[in-house]
Length: 196
Image (cartoon, rainbow, N blue to C red):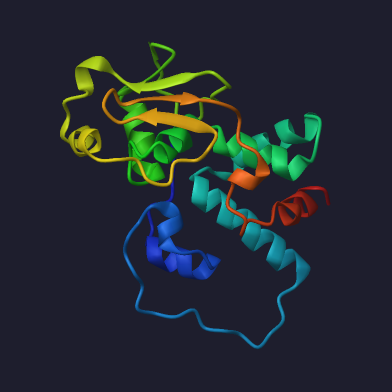
C-alpha cells in the first residue's frame, strides 16, 4: 500500500499540526509563514481533509470509503467518520502505547505481531468492536520493542480502552465518542467538502 514518505515536519507545518499529534518528538526550527491573502472556504475544507488523512495515515480512496460508510450510519456523519478512523486497529495499537507512532503500529500489525480475540490480524484497517481483546502474540512478547513497556506505566490511555502492561493485553471497553477524539479536528469542514 502506498503511503506518505516525504518530510514529516514540513507537512506538519503546512497543515498546522504539531508532530506530537503523530507521536514524533522532533521539533521544527522553522515557523509557518503567515500569508496576507484570506483563505477560501474550499481551501479550509481541503486543508482539514488533508490534515485528518495525514494524522491517521490513510489515502484518498480509503478515506472516501470511511466517509461513505459514516454517511450511511445513523447520527452525525463527521463524528461517525472520526469514530471509524479511531477504531482502526493500527490506531488502537498506537493509543495503547504498543507503538510510538501510527506508522510503527501499522508495521506491527502488518508483520502479524498483534492478535484480536486470540486470532492473528495483519490488516491495519481492521475495525475493532466493543469487547475486543487486543494483545501482542505470545511468542513475540520478548521482542525489544515491547520490553520497555512491561516495566513502565501507560500514560495518556483513552478512557474507552484498558491496557495491562505486564501481559501486553488491552480491551476495548466501549467505542470512542467525539469527546475522546482530538478537539482541533473540524470534521464539519470535511462533510461540507464531500457533500458538494
